[in-house]
Structures are given as C-alpha cells and as structure tokens.
Amino acid sequence: MPNTLVKGVEVFYRDEGNGCSDTAQLAAVDNGARCARLTNRYRLIAPDHLGYGRTGAYPGSIPLVDHEIEIIRRMIELAGAPVHLVGHSYGGSLMARMALMTPESVRSLTLIEPTLFYLLAPAGFRSEDEEIRAVADRVAHYVDAGDAKYRVADCI
Image (cartoon, rainbow, N blue to C red; front, top):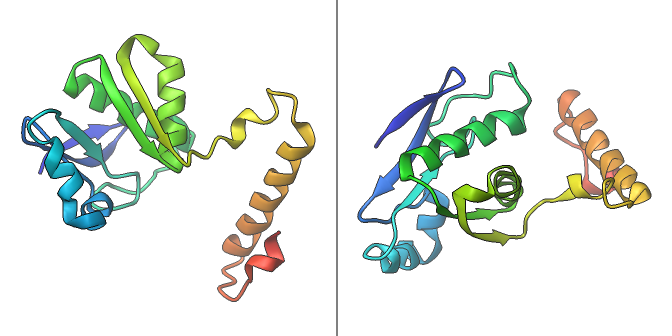
C-alpha cells in the first residue's frame, strides 16, 4: 500500500481499483461490500489519521487540524480535483474545513455525524461553545493525569 510524506510524517493511504479503497474501519462494515460496489465507478483514496493504522504519530509541530488538512490536501493532489469528499465524525469536520478552504477542489461533500463544534462561537452560540470546551478540558485533564478510572459522568 502507498505512503506519502506530509509535514515530516509518513502517511499510509489506500488507493485501489478504478477504483475503490477503504480504511480498515470501513472494510469491517458489511465486509467491504458497499465499497466493492463503487469499485467500477469511483476511485477512493483513504488515509489513516495521524497516529492511527499505519500512519506515523502526530509530532506536535503544527496544530493537529492543520496537519490533517495538509494530508487531505495531498490526497486531493493525488486524485486530481475536483473530488467527492466523504468524512465521518472528526473526518467529517476535516472535510467540511477542506471544502470551505478549497471549494474549487470539491465536487460534492458527504458528512456523517461531523464534529463541527468549532462553528458554535462564530455562529453566536457562545454559551454552548463554552460548555463543550469545558467538557473537553475535563476529559483532557483526566487523560493527562493518566487516570484510567474516570467515568463519563465525571466529565459532563
């Protein structure tokens, strides 16, 4: 499987068929049958996130989101624009950002349960933004402390 270097990190990605590719997570859903149906119509290029799968760890040299965006930018270069962007959860947030940054590179955008909390404050939802940041800060506190016994109730 192919690799590419992005901001000093070796990034693993899948690029198969004419083609279809899936991450291991997507392949586990219905044994990859949905992706197989796309093989003759689309080429899918799917990178592993920083620190996951076969991609190197996040080095911390630039903000995580910026590093992930650069990986997506590289995948678009490999595919040739315009592309269909598909993202789930954090990946959905990244794809939304990429589409806003380079609309000329995007043919369509499919977001599944995207985490778009960063849009709260600019949209005037200050108290909601503060609330989600407080929860995230509490979770980070427990993780940083190495406390494996924390409960979700302690964070909310």
